[in-house]
Length: 252
Image 1 (cartoon, rainbow, N blue to C red):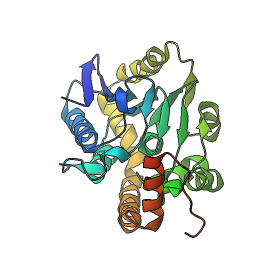
Image 2 (image 1 turned 90 degrees about the vertical axis):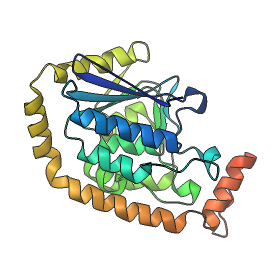
Image 3 (image 1 turned 30 degrees about the vertical axis):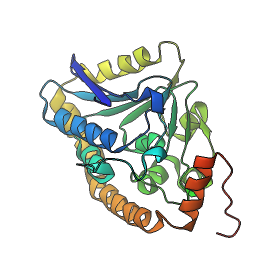
């Protein structure tokens, strides 16, 4: 059973996170299949643009906390996925059809263009989970949003509405929920109608000088995540999540 669907037509590879029953939360299968989708699209002559969206009412609820300790061993994992996205030379478009939490939010910083449904909202819950930010967001968010806005979103774990995300520069446009994906795909078609090599070369000029810095941020973030995961604050957060109570960080 696949958890990531991909279809290519008219120059557009549409990749859909397909775990609607889990709000498209990322387990190792999602990391691996999504990484495979980027690697495949990178060498697919029929693909000019990759569009990432979610099935059902969510874009992605972030890491699947229920899979912790019982998940399969990943082939690519988070690190492999992020490297594949950063190295992806064709336009990468996010169509956030609903809530985006954790990597469902930070992946916006890796997109070349992001669109959000009106009802979409976003959250970086890392501090509330006793861990640190990921997906190069400690590099991409300050560049996109400015230092103070980026710091607040990454530190506070507060929700950000689609309109607030647009005003901050995290998404480019907000479309009504009804017909959202059609509107986002219309934008992707604008890009797909253009010469592929022009798209690739222009993206390289924009992103190329930043790629090593983005990868360095990923390495630093992953090292911090390794240090924090399983620590007292993280254990308290996971216990609170499983028991559906508010975490108590008063002594942490």
